[in-house]
Image (cartoon, rainbow, N blue to C red; front, side, top):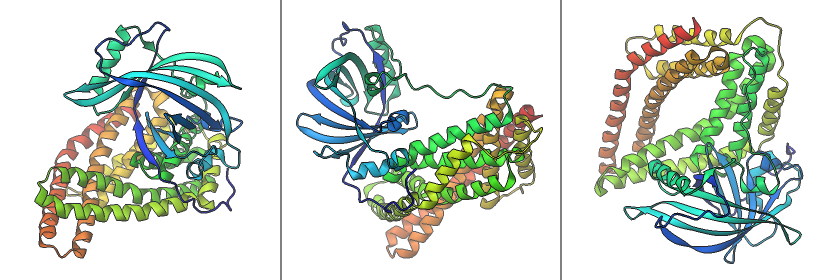
Length: 492
């Protein structure tokens, strides 16, 4: 954990960021790419020197930091977990020391430990670019990898990768099947660096046995969510991919939900103090997340308009982007605060050694307790609920769903069905809340604009938000009925 007197911010160097979506396959020495698969790519040499701490903290966190030389270009590349994908961050820099702008992103994972070279990989890469209807959908590359140590090659292997370039999963699946027919087979899941270091493939943590003590399940859930939070901390600091912040906020929300659901087995003052600090973290992440959601929505709306109507909406989108940039400065400031570093230390400690009390409560009891709260709240809804009432239902639905996750291993499919239905209700209520927030932003922008055209567009957008909420309300009742029925079956 870094010292609390660390400088508040590091001015970032110019970086580029992309999302890496790829499928790795294993191949034998005699494997060849099928003919007429795509347009050949030029053969090239990539020399990558990987950096990590002596205890391989980055590698174990599935984070990669390397200095790559490719056709005379020197660049530092950082690969970060992003759900099932990875975010690749690049800084063009010839220096042989990791740039401060990237080291700053890794403060939780590296702290005061020293980064040093741990492996050098030399890769001869060949491949093809695959197009459909003249648009690129994937690159298929065959890598011949040499692991170099003290100037000598100590290991060689080959790998096949399909890198997805477009939002066309079906096309990538077809390419994978074609390559498998040509002799490719399942990959063991290890990144190249893992093979170079002879490390085993990363394996998902196994949940406790069904009959394990309740606190073991609580610790396991807390551990998963802490890891998820730490994995998305660097991307949230960088602020180039909205999904990083979203996933960090999800981890924060789930940690709070586990603490709340496990309240009967945890020391009250200890759990309440930790939950309050997580609420602080969630609050400023939520400000940024709301703006990310609105930007994505209005950019999509803009693409559907003609050029004349798009111009005033573009002004509104620019206004939202300015607000988002300001909020990102707040996010970065808080993530560099002593308060945040102390919170991370506390949640890590909580996952390993929570403060507990003696109780006979079971996992089933915890999940049933949250479901009953949700059921009472739904039954007490008026016939025409307002935004505040529905937002409370959304929060209780999340809590009931996360409590069900704790009990999932002991309850089985009934809990899974309830969680699926809760997610559907949660998403529907989320759309309602998003439309309410969107209207708030539209009205605030309208107060600052004197353009007649902008006023006309704002009126249209407000009407559209009201229609969104009307559509949600029309679908809610049957969703609530299904949710309560699945909850009754799971927690009766």
